[in-house]
Length: 61
Image 1: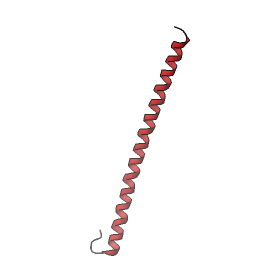
Image 2 (image 1 turned 45 degrees about the vertical axis):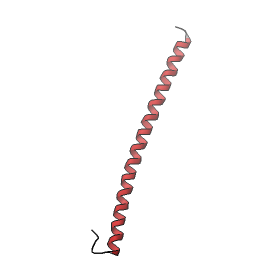
Image 3 (image 1 turned 180 degrees about the horizontal axis):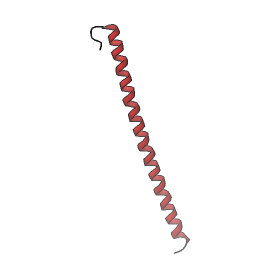
């Protein structure tokens, strides 16, 4: 086994590590965006209900 074998092993390991990091980072970003989108939707719903209550007092919750 010469140095190219070990260099290949190191390159394969580095590519694997970078791939794992990228997918982990992507999954985390998707999770954060998902939570933020749900929170934003909930806030908009509350604001809509408040506006409806101002204009149509009988319909507001």
